[in-house]
Image (tube, rainbow, N blue to C red; front, top):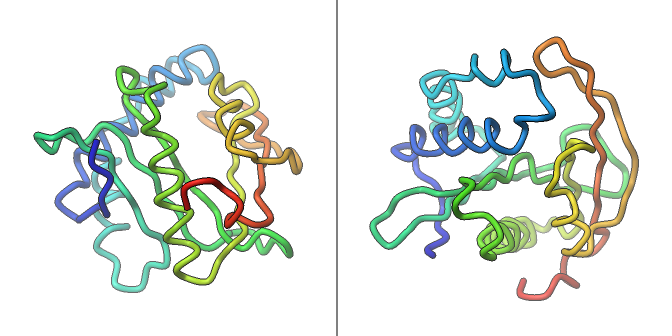
Length: 174
């Protein structure tokens, strides 16, 4: 599996991973109406804008097969809510269902962590829906439970939990 920096031309492939992974991972969590309303085109436009912005502080890595099919991605950058301890944040980390539980998520997590370290950021957090069946992934990587907050997705109130790493240099492989 090849992990590389995303390029603007990857926007549609990233959008497909984003929408498809939401539809499989959140099928029993988020309303089916909301999941059905997700659009490759809208997400592609969002990711294209992100990847094309000359002032963006975030970055994306993609996981690709040998024939360059994008099967996962991670987006990260500075923490967005002004946390005093955790200066970096992984905003999104998604994989297509057929590529989950193969170590690819860990590779994307570590690539993002390494990039943050190169930018002088050695602490980070990630927000995960409490009902997400894969939240134990972050615990296995050493993430510590920090706090919860409410979030609205498609007119539905849900709860997210933050996991944090005070020193990402302790994560093996970074």
